[in-house]
Length: 261
Image (cartoon, rainbow, N blue to C red; front, side, top):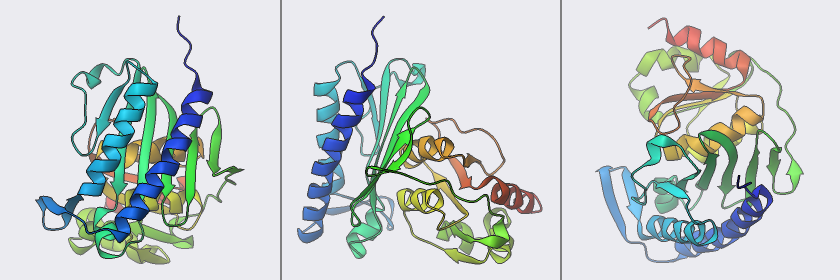
């Protein structure tokens, strides 16, 4: 039986993210090649692709036999079995923010083994803060363990929600917003997860793809937060869904209001 060297994995990923941050900061100053994916606000740049290629190369060279699911097209075909090491990559989360603001964007990576959640990483690029950890290690920001957040109710805190959901009042989101102390729309799943992890918001809700929620799910669950679909179902890490990460009390409040639609 081969025993996975998790210390080596963690040290490797943290070193890779130092280089990823350098590449993304350099991209902020460079002339970007920008293309549209599903629509005019769904963008991809040459930097997204460059960072994903870098991470995939490092993973495959350092941990042979790994399988990868990347947002920008790097993916192995037999991921459904969950066997072995599976890495899920979002090289640049919040690409529209990256292009228009040079702020409020992240890079994310999740590591699963035989279907089990192991390690998640979210890099807040501009603030140089790497949030990382898992069920066995706890959750850290750089080298400091992240303190637990109070289990606040919806009306005790701010809520981060998808702008598209709010505009369309999807699943009664407008009433959820009114019940909270205020709404914030950051446009980045990584930043959204970080704000719940650090207690800046009591919840974050958006339609997310696997690369958007895989790392955050690992971190939030390890930190004692709720991470489910807005129907209060468990998330399949390889599926897209309407995702809610929140304190447990806020989650209950939000789901009750969404069921009133």
